[in-house]
Image (cartoon, rainbow, N blue to C red):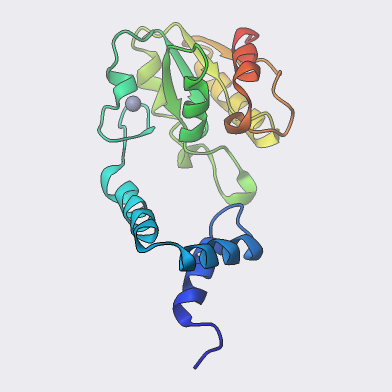
Length: 194
Ligand SMILES: [Zn+2]
């Protein structure tokens, strides 16, 4: 018999495989759940399975949603003439806390040649039909780091013959992530776009 039960090892390893969780945290979470009531474990397991069962990708903006088109794309009270381009669904959440009321386009990452991620691996070409549909401005809101900037530059070159392209202001800390920026900073970066 192994010293640490196999079920415990399996859960520790599952936690460890997640981003931002090291061995210590993985162990702490596992032992916490071990002592937690049955329903805590049940709720966690249910929530995990639900995101796989109930979440789809919107076929217009490529954000995660319960249906496609998503509620943002379907909301005609939003400004249909402005599209903000972001890397990940969490960036949409971040900008939804600001006063931005346009539409989004989620790339699904950034151009990262060293990881084999080129423009074709992202939802970049899907932007073309969208901007030709009465859109007057595309706001690039990729993360302020080398790869995010390179991604923004690529899209700018592609779209600038078709539509006005702006970038969010550099109020964000360099190397920081859009998803972790506070609301005020995001709001400022949006106002200072150019
Ligand atoms: Zn959508």
